[in-house]
Image 1: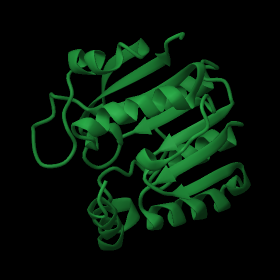
Image 2 (image 1 turned 180 degrees about the horizontal axis):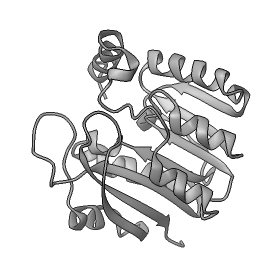
Image 3 (image 1 turned 60 degrees about the horizontal axis):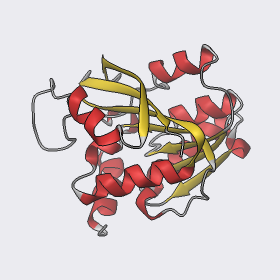
Image 4 (image 1 turned 180 degrees about the vertical axis):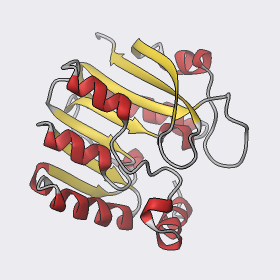
Length: 203
């Protein structure tokens, strides 16, 4: 990937107050919270992709997960670290300002990968590379929590829109679809979304 996405994301964090960022819900993802509080997602090593202001990473750390939180924006990482410090979980989170597609995660390292709004920005070959990264990085039968824009949201520049059928087509070779439903992104925009729970298929 070029340096342009990095400068673009960083520019947004400098232009807008954190609470005005369109992807900021001001709290952890409600569907993720339900899965953790139900006991379905047991604490373990977790990767938070495109962690932004750190709401999900802080929540997971507070629930006993060992979290690696990755965002391409150094400003986002700094703000997330401040949030983690205030919640007294900073020492439980490994924050990294990097492009996740360039990460060399140890094979089978994570039992959970949380992707709230990262995948739908990927185009073309980057999607296949990312799906391969997810599979390599997950432990046996590890889980991905995925939230993307729905094709029921009007098209515009920015995130790609996905139908349920397209998500199934993209992921079904490497993952079992444990759950897939319509929802909305929490935050100011209330954009229509799809939420998927994907389990790594046995080798």
